[in-house]
Amino acid sequence: MIRAGTLLLGLDLAGTAVFALNGALTGIRVARVDIVGVLTLGMVTALGGGIIRDVIIGYLPPATFRDWRYLVVAATGALVAFLWGRRLDRLSFPIEVFDALGLSFFAVTGASKALDAGLGPVQAVILGAVTGVGGGTIRDVLIGRVPTVLSSGLYAIPALVGALITVVAAELGLRGLPAALVAVAACFAIRLVGIRFDLNAPAPPGLPPS
Amino acid sequence: MIRAGTLLLGLDLAGTAVFALNGALTGIRVARVDIVGVLTLGMVTALGGGIIRDVIIGYLPPATFRDWRYLVVAATGALVAFLWGRRLDRLSFPIEVFDALGLSFFAVTGASKALDAGLGPVQAVILGAVTGVGGGTIRDVLIGRVPTVLSSGLYAIPALVGALITVVAAELGLRGLPAALVAVAACFAIRLVGIRFDLNAPAPPGLPPS
Amino acid sequence: MIRAGTLLLGLDLAGTAVFALNGALTGIRVARVDIVGVLTLGMVTALGGGIIRDVIIGYLPPATFRDWRYLVVAATGALVAFLWGRRLDRLSFPIEVFDALGLSFFAVTGASKALDAGLGPVQAVILGAVTGVGGGTIRDVLIGRVPTVLSSGLYAIPALVGALITVVAAELGLRGLPAALVAVAACFAIRLVGIRFDLNAPAPPGLPPS
Image (cartoon, rainbow over all chains, first blue to last red; front, top):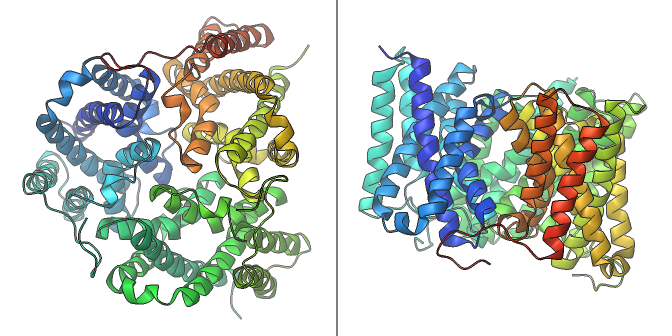
């Protein structure tokens, strides 16, 4: 049987790798960056959300600085993007799928860690979503664009759903692999449906959707 | 008699509500954001300054994550802006007045909390101002504009004055409602005079004011 | 004999002064800022990297908020830029030299402090570089440009080398003035060679360098 700690770590490292790859590819595509920029943007995308969460819950140094594996996995993902970015860029669909998986892992682990730190359920849902979307938000600010999460697509909403399921399950006494899988699957499915049908979150009334 | 704790909490929650409203309205006006963006920008504007202050004084989780009321008040303020933004936008003068009130509350509570945490007077003045202007600064970065606090109007200066009065009063042994009211009133008055007469802080010598 | 603590403090304050000057001058040149903006950008450039480092290692309040000298030195550097910016701007070469010195001091002190806080060697190298480049990165985001460290010049790489030498020396039991001087000199020399010969870090394969 997989222990909860090992499960969280595995999901976290998998999410870290795909976020680093995706963040670095976005950097190469949108901005004119050198190897320092590619590595920085990949690592910020991969580690930023978890660092914000750990700062807020007061778990310092953050998990990603206690365990060198996060740093190495993130740097490796970014380096792969640096070396083979042109070829990977043609695979945009698979990369969106991996990114959706990273989002799902981070939303679930983020909410779990907030609960473990003794925060309330509302806070844990918010911090789960922040863990999922925070890194990409910082990346977008660094490359000079309004974070895409604020304006288009379904990105924060699946993260909120995944975090909410995690928190509700924990309140009912259900923690561990089955609850985590359901929450990851829900977030992942909503995100993929959003991509496939090009769904957007509602815009303010009276304004056309972007 | 109102206890200092209740006073601080009341000022803080009032400031949170108006900042969330104002931040969300600014987001709707300047960027093309969906409901996620409106809620995020409102909450960041309302909570960002206090979170920066609490991170720096090492009070983690920050006050806004210990007490769910901050999160609910901020989300409610942003939701009101989302639903009735078009109508509220015509009220720009009243909203600037409320925002000036929020700035005043935050500058005073921010300086008080820094002193309570044992920081020195210089640091408390700076952190009071940061509490007041920090959230709007992050919001402006997220929507892709140079923070207005850096370039125009009298915004940081009234916050610094409010924080300074709070710190000087505390050094003289005067804490509680009367000192807080004087500090809030001074910040509020300077801010309103600045809006009314379109005053700006001095620009670097040799350059025309912006 | 200079004690390690005094050495660290001296390097840190010298770096703070030149970074504040440089950050404030950049703000005046690139954005239309008033005195609040000049002081903010100077102080953020000077203090930002150290604050990020101290937040990540959990040393709160950060060093720059425990000791008012950091705040006063940073504010003074920014004020000098505000008053005499036009004249200083003609001295762009000397200011780049001072900035290179600030970068070198910060990379070395940042890595040392991370080791002192018990972080591992990989983390200390990264945090040394973050201490050096973090403040300028925040400044660039605030004035609305993609941080120059991501796209051009040799800036993060000398910082990484200075931090790496510091960490390797510490692992070999060599701490104190001689090791610090070698690390500072290496970072400084690489940075100056980079400026002189206009060197850039490698761009992603298949793309022209920027």
